Image 1 (cartoon, rainbow, N blue to C red):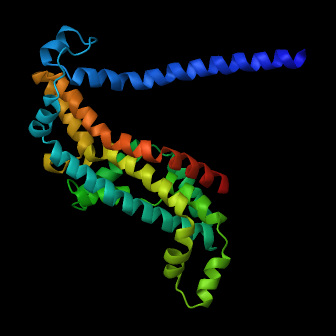
Image 2: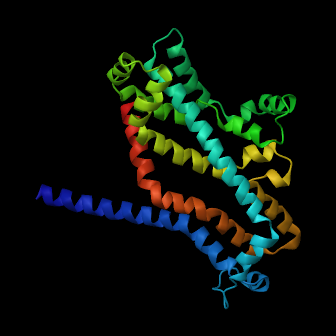
Image 3: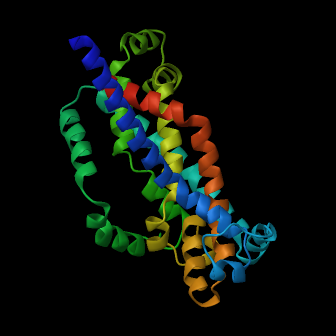
Length: 282
């Protein structure tokens, strides 16, 4: 009898939790659905009723916003920063994590502690020093300055990769050294491939972060021709305060979301599995 009651309680709890998560999922999906509906309206239809279904879907809003709002330039800048920013970030993080995890030297533990402390410092706290550094070194309003900013070796990427390298046996590297391999060869040819799950997870996460980054380009870039999509969308929002063509703005937002949605749909399981694996190994 007690077992039956406990089973019923579990079912009720499961149903309640499922309903709560379903409602939460709706709150996440609804804004995108609402933007999609309104991006297919004329400006007049939008201001008449923001909740109704478009009478005649205006697919030309997407073509118009692509041509008029210079989205191609913003897309190109975002792709450039994402590809090279992610490459530099993952490379520097993997090198730092490997050295601190596998090489024992005087300051290895101190550096690991510093990496943890750096994660606790809000980025806004380093803004004045970083801004002055960019100005004094001539890196302000350059793509190279942003790439340098993205290439920092410490942070979440470092912690995750540290866990992977820590779990890899050092005997593989020792065997490579016996065969005459250098430290760099042992890292790139032996140890790095064994940390592949972590590298993949960090690459995807960092790529999404760089693609979505608004704050850094907004602070350190002035030229519109160099700005990525996130800042370009912000500029569109500012312009819409006067033009008030909101359906086209929603169309631009959805176009900007498409690459991220595709990446997450394809690699969400990979991100979760490899991130958890890195945390457990660390």
